[in-house]
Image 1 (tube, rainbow, N blue to C red):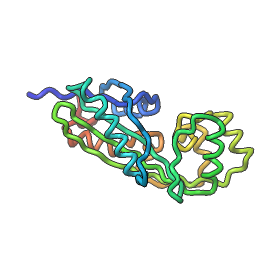
Image 2: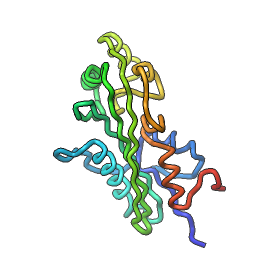
Image 3: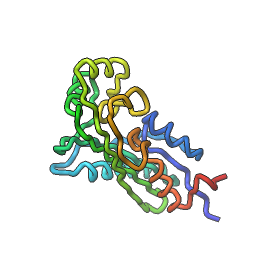
Image 4: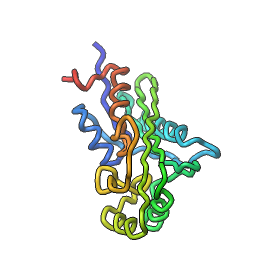
Length: 199
């Protein structure tokens, strides 16, 4: 009988780690080191999938018996402007001002790579966040309270960030946090892993 591969999350994100733990599958985490610079003219959804696959591939040599989960999120304004992780208060303020009153599209790339065979499956999950019209005072207060400087789009949907939206559209709200669990479950089944039946 073929041994099931070890599950590895190619991320140091505590948000993704918490989401994956909900599936109650044993897994390890490792942080990949890749260049996340967008290519010229690259569409947000293409970028998200490329980075997710790149993260998984970056760990294949060091984890040759693992089934590696890569995920990356790209947020884009209606004009195509990509919103990356802000990194600081000034950039986060600018991003939320740009997002105010807009529908921001979030593309979460997902990749599963079997390091034993190099079999790769990918998916891109889209989720639309309709932002309220935010006052400068609301933006400042939100950023001071939550400091979401490591989050694409400058908010934490699982926290106070939910108050920034007028509505949300998409199949899986977990994708806004960084790991689309519905799509992940589908891909895991393609590799013979069913969280509902796993011992």
